[in-house]
Image (cartoon, rainbow, N blue to C red):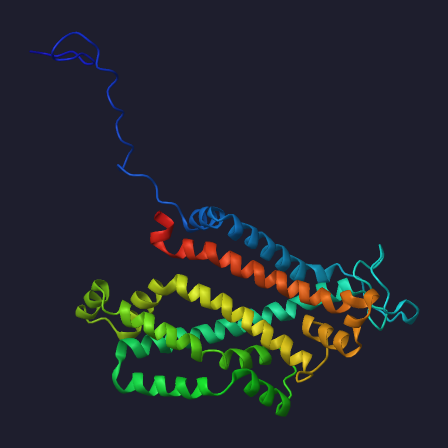
Length: 312
């Protein structure tokens, strides 16, 4: 018996329209990396706000110095309070504090992120390598890490900076980054120990892939969210170390950055005067906003880089 389309085999009642044919390929197009990033960054309200604040600070510090006026000494207007002409007041040389804050952010952000990148690369590579290879190599790396952990990094940093004058931001970034890896290496090594026992790592080992390929292609990518969180913390600690060096006068006080501004404001006792308090507080507020934006933004990055959180 021939059954007409759209009718019930037991009668003449209509059964409704036939289901539409699936799209070509039978599956949806997979979102690209930019779409995944944008969806992930908007899932957390605090993370999205932190991302917007970070982008705003980055643009102000990188592009703002091209639009700020040339600073000149104005003794008649020194240590003035906030006004329509000088929103954060002036310093002891009559220079605009807001212009100093805008001009001084670029060097601090550069040193913080470059130092965090150096320390993270060292810790991730050697920590993963020690966990995967084991044996004597693991013992040597762990011993070197334990020795480095027994020496307070901030004191060692201050001693090195006092004896060797490092005048460039790149040199300070390298110095801070080289001294900032031990703590992260221990935690990365512990994470890599659990990952190296998983099936895909065993499969890569059975395929006789090289050690560097297994470490860099199989182990490290599966720690991406953890590495990103520690990179953010490393950048914050590097910024604190840099500002601390300038505050103690252990780095050359040339140019303009937030640490130098805080140093001269503290030396002039700006925080004891109501009219000049923003000379000291301006860079402090900028550093606090940068830190807060990085911490809140890292929550969204964890969801983006962790497939389980992203799919849930």
